[in-house]
Length: 137
Image 1 (cartoon, rainbow, N blue to C red):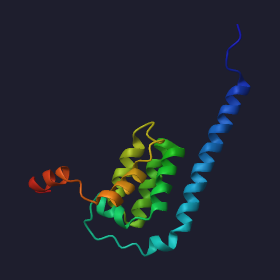
Image 2: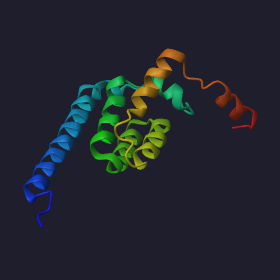
Image 3: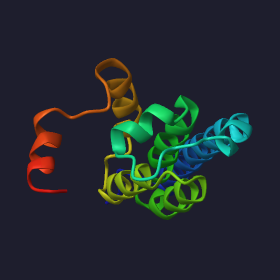
Image 4: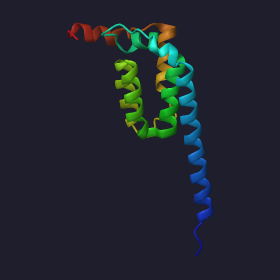
């Protein structure tokens, strides 16, 4: 009995996955390199929340983090943690690391969607954030 999947099929799949990972990581690196001078001048106020931090964050950085998550899935968590920590975006670091640790969420551009949301509707989460303020957080 012959297997429906041959070694050649597995080799082709592995090559396609390797190319996909390479393209995603390369694009992420290019995006970060394009905005490295802007990242050095990034001045996020201390204690800024997730939404407020996104207002200061360039779109290319958010796209780079989402591309790393897309290409590397769970393996992107430590890379994005270190990258965002070095830049000083601790609020984004925490959300990005948690999202990267959830398997198979790579195709969902979470930070990019949040960045667009904050640009359209503002950094405040409305009732969610008001509930935290009532509890003294």
